[in-house]
Image (cartoon, rainbow over all chains, first blue to last red; front, top):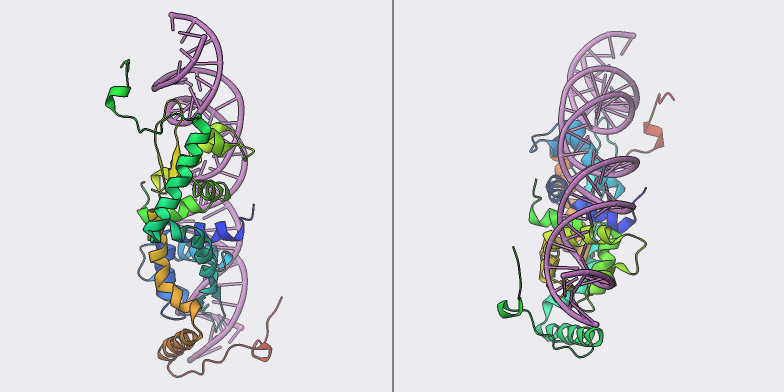
Amino acid sequence: MPLDPLSAKFAALADPTRRAILARLALGETSVSKLAEPFDMSMPAVSKHLKVLERAGLIARGREAQWRPCRIEPEALKGVDDWLERYRKLWSERLDRLEVYLHELQARESKAGGKPPKPRSEEHKRDRRK
Amino acid sequence: MPLDPLSAKFAALADPTRRAILARLALGETSVSKLAEPFDMSMPAVSKHLKVLERAGLIARGREAQWRPCRIEPEALKGVDDWLERYRKLWSERLDRLEVYLHELQARESKAGGKPPKPRSEEHKRDRRK
DNA sequence: TCTATATTTAACTATTTGGTTATTTAACCA
DNA sequence: TGGTTAAATAACCAAATAGTTAAATATAGA
């Protein structure tokens, strides 16, 4: 039931509240109640969000008197960045568009046995009832 | 009910099956059954994963005869990359560690009214029953 | 020791998610 | 036509998520 580390990170980031919390923590260590202030949400709800972030390794919580100062653990985001690396070239360079196109072409041809990879246009769709 | 675009992307990426599908599609357009092959999972399950990826804008589906070739939409990942940008400096440079530390220091001092920001050590915890 | 404050935990609820099998749709081919 | 293949949809289910209120815990301070 424990999600793999990368999934846990993505899941933790898939919530605007949690991303806002991270944005706040990027400015420095903050107590839970300070973090909760901007949100129209109960404290336990915020506490749960923090637990999600903590289990993902994105934040750490300390102890100072009755406060639990939270701090961001930015190295955890490195994992997300590393995952992105593989895809970065696909959007960053036009040159690579060509590469992908050639791959597609190759895949389609080997699958269809020489069938022309023409995209479908209106006149190909005959006998479309309903 | 519709998630904001960035949340939809993170949520879509928070699943190993869907990330594996993306990795496959990075090599080129592929049909649904080809995509499903490596997974111990029914076709409808894969179809649902594809719908999640599609709604997040991470893939697009075409139509070629009875096949629905899927292709990756790498530009969608740019959004994730842009979000990361804000945090990249926090892990990439030691120099910025110092910056954060100063921020933390400042926040703690202004909150505690000059109390020393000493981390708690064992001898401070008195009378900790059970 | 009593009280106030900060935070977490417990218990509950509604919604979403990720899977299943069975059915339907869409297109090809003979 | 009718049969086959590719894929999506429907209906269902169990588990996870995101919220709630109420209670428990930990610490500071009078």
